[in-house]
Image (tube, rainbow, N blue to C red; front, side, top):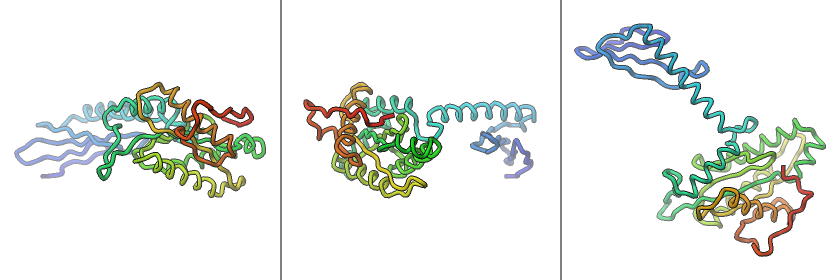
Length: 252
């Protein structure tokens, strides 16, 4: 193998008694994010190389825009629109979203909704800039609490949604309670301590997204109405005696 020519837009490698391979970099905002390998009998003309680079840059930018469209701009968590799609994929059991086996025991999917307690007081007392900082820090704590294969969303305002896997409801409760404690113990700048309330349920059947979210919301309302800073499973509720919603609670 003989490395014959290196330029900004192409690396040409000639193999003895074989073809020429050109390596064309793919750029996104000035960074190389991939490489296109082209094998030809002759060296690619510089004009053809430049055209390939231009087309690949357009493609990389389009992928970047699609990726950004899935994210909340403040927290860079997944956004509400992506949440609806992921719930449907999970409950319908599509492809890689099927619960995985771990030590011969199947993990199941759970939905949790978390809300920052008394968030309106934070905005009123410290301003919206500090309020946004609190949302950003809580988002980071949530994201760090889950595995890479789980999903964390900014659902709206100071409310977050998590789609995650656990072997049992008890394990899910332990994971969410650990998250609750991590938030309660975190020293937020200027604010000090704050808490979150959480409601969750297992995703067990094909249902509408609104129905699933409503059940998680009922569990969240129960956590709010019984003192805040707690985790409640929908299965714990007396469904025929659903808790009344305290309208003084700031939900958005």
